[in-house]
View 1 (cartoon, helix red, strand yellow):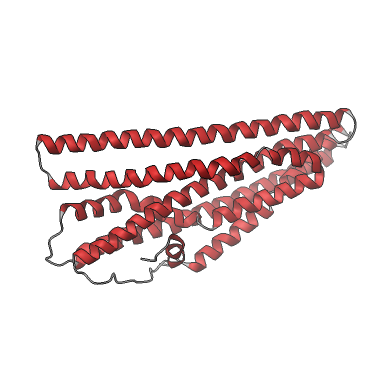
View 2 (tube, rainbow, N blue to C red; view 1 turned 90 degrees about the horizontal axis):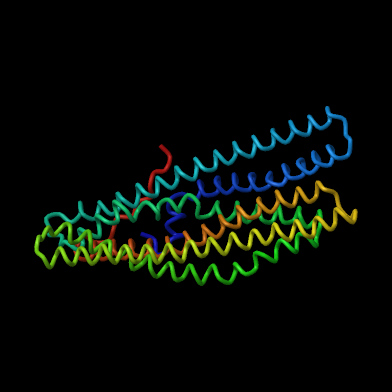
Length: 323
């Protein structure tokens, strides 16, 4: 297995990552067009434009939304497929260690680790492959495109919106580091649970040990939930402050005749278009850090298993991605 997570991503298929990235670029470039059409519809309605012209704008808006949705559907399906290919590769790679072991005995700990990887750990690591490059490219592209459009419409209002995201740059990495430590501890405990199930030793000490591990998993998960949902609460609070800023500053500009009502509506829609990709970027960052921890543990377990079973170096084979 490659030494790092992105080496594994490239092993799963460079051509597919390039194709997914191309779809992501098309999607974020088309992201600002519906906002502009929406702004023109509002201004046309309030400005006394003939109805046939308004209807044409509405049809154009529907066409753009349909194109954007179809492109996103293709992207999601493609990312899901490449992710499943990576999951299959990981599971087969771990199973091949057992097959190459011959008659060599496998202790309960090694077997428990293999069981945990095949049933639970491979899926989130392999699933990340599909979004590893395209997700940050897509969401950052949307942020840049929509943010640039908002700056073009009204720079001061755009700055007021941007300010609410600055604190998140500080508290998100700190809280994610705390989550990562708990995830590593959780995986270790789950492997020990698998080990205990394989040993099938029914004694009071063994049962108590398993009960303690289950309780540890419960406490660890609850700790992760507290940090994760507190982070979500703070991010949502920042977003609502952004809406309040748009209402206050935009309302002042409309009352004083410095901007049109359509611009305020475009900013409200634009903030939702910025909030979603920003949240997706934060989720991707969280997944990246957690997946790096999980991948490192899978890689180390595979190396240890191969060494203990005297199977020699793992046979590294480029997976056949295209049927």
